[in-house]
Image (cartoon, rainbow, N blue to C red; front, side, top):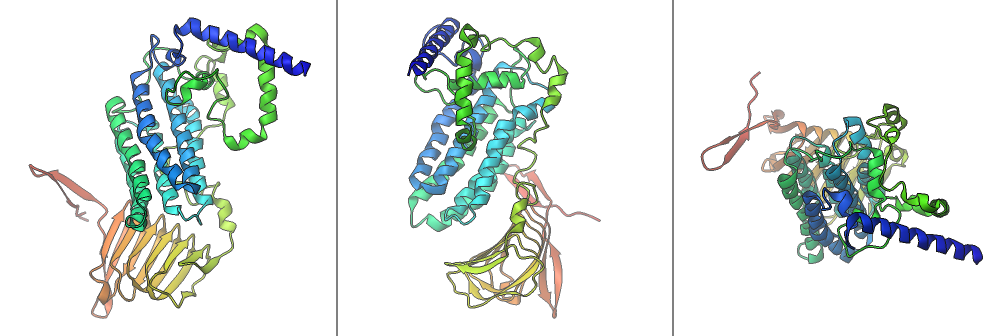
Length: 478
């Protein structure tokens, strides 16, 4: 008990000294963030604008996600943490000059980790009833990498927003006439990216705006921002004394709880020295003046290097060891992880059933009868033969796909796919082919007992006709 009282007394003394320090530095109460967010004791205008986005569209998205609960709610909390990480980076940029490119990558690590965490959550929950919700978020969250994009970060966010729309349209299709809560969720999520585009256009048109004064940004200066606790989230009422950085991963925090408490008490036992590290950074600790410090950390991949996680990335490679699956689960036929199988057949189909084909390589599947829809996701060198589909056939994130239609299908969608050959039947010639971000697409039309191949345009030209933009396929003259 005596030891506990002693620790509490030291804690109270430390808090008193911290409050006194902030009071002297920033004037009145409630201004804790002023000194680090901008110049001359005021929050940088573009940080204030970002706070309005957090308190507006992001907060609304969190509210609707909590209503849906489950995986969607958990995923939304990860999104909130990612936006907080972005705010911290904006605070840093508002008070520091732009560092060298390799150091920018290191400073982007917290945001990159949050993006990866969000995408991994989707991959771990492919059986979720809210999988389309998770996919919409996972495919578009790399938009937060706009801070490393120049000269036009706005269009990059628009591209990510389009990736989300591909999946939000599925959500609307499933719930538009049955549960308006999901419709509200879709609107709130897409609104985030619309507002972020407007924010970028106003404050960072050609790229992130760094401060023209102050020190060059470094991991040490980022650490200084993080240890200022209250400045990581949108401005609330005056917060309590600084606590652990919100960017700490919650999963590892539980395991390291004892070590964190020990570190806290070690800091308190410094006595008067506790306040010395709050503001001053010596020259030998600054990476721009001490190049040897730059080599201490490994290079960090920017979150903007790729829009979606690569199917063959090391973090996803363990999934290749999964056992092959071909089974009916409720109304869904699951065909997963099939390798070198050319005799796969689905019989006894019903109109209400759908087929989901995931990570099947060098295989062929035949689906007999009439089915609602078919999705091919992350497959390579895969062949599909089917009789009739009343909804849509979708090909996503795949390579070298061949599809043969024996009966009818109204729509075939090709997205983020390299190499897709579609053999239409006489009955399916009115099928609509919708493609985006794909290449090497060919439609084969039956003529005189054989097939004639027609390439799908990949290049377009756009011109202003005096009143509107007119876009048409560009013919390549060989």
